[in-house]
Amino acid sequence: MKLKKETDYALRIVFFLAKIYIENANEIIDSKSISKAEHIPESFCLKILKKLVKAKIIKVYRGVSGGYSLDKEPCDISLGEVIHVIEKDEAINTCICTPGSCSNQRDGRCPVRNSLSLIQNELFKSMEKIKFSDIINSSF
Image (cartoon, rainbow, N blue to C red; front, side, top):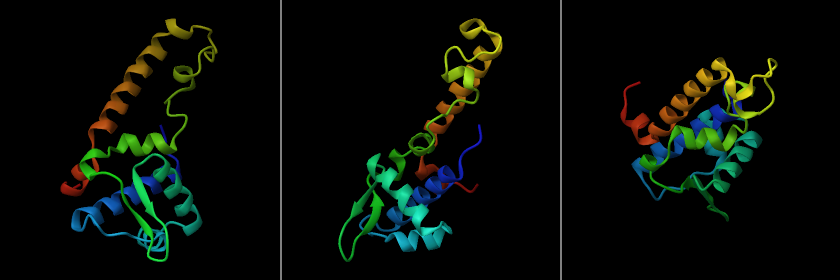
């Protein structure tokens, strides 16, 4: 599974806002500052911010002194949650998410598909376990 560049940017945006949140939960950051700090083209950053707001991961403050902040605590936001917002086709192989796509016409009986499905489930469980507070507090 290869993550899209947009997903990488979304993870970096949430990480950036999580660090700010831990320092000062009331601080609001404008999109230009986020874009500059994380080296993300501003128009692309705005597109991602909109998706994260819609998913209720971050919140938007409108007006002259508007901007963005987390909508919940960093300990309540997982890597998986952010990844799921951006990645629509999350399967590591087409046969897992698209019934009838097996070129050998094995579908549910395919041992390879079943093995890949187990791997994918473990990957998703792992992504859900890792919270942004864990990342901030780690020494990766």
